[in-house]
Amino acid sequence: MQFVDWFGDGSIVVVDLALACCAVESEFAVPEGAPVLDDVPTGSLPVAIVSGTLTDAVSGLVRDRIQSLGPNVHVVSFGACAAAGGPYWDSYSVTKGVDQLVHVDHYIAGCPPPPSALTSHLESLRSARGSS
Ligand code: SF4
Image 1 (cartoon, rainbow, N blue to C red):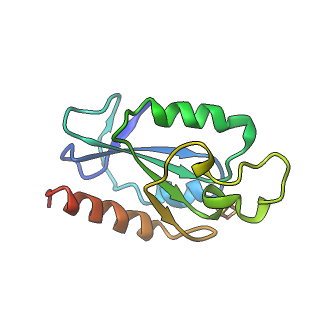
Image 2 (image 1 turned 135 degrees about the vertical axis):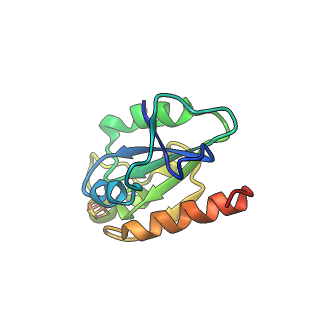
């Protein structure tokens, strides 16, 4: 797994579990030139973003990836599909939200949400942790 050192200071490292079209937006939010790391540095807050349509076929893998980040992982549900299945809520193969698998700390609404909504949330998170 690879992590984006979002602010380049080790405060927050992000893994984007990119599943469908919302991932275009979440990937667009990544700051240009942000370092990519192979592990979570000591003292960093790991953030897992679930962006896109979650299906039952991949839900176990998504759950395992998130749980492997430890008990302090901050989970962001990005978009309507990740929150509750979105336009595919009644499909037999679509999981009705990532909260069926793991806890979710923050929901970002939209189909798709704008990249700025993710940027804004991560900046708030960094401020709340005392970094600036
Ligand atoms: S919420 Fe909309 S844009 Fe995002 S993955 Fe679902 S259908 Fe695509």
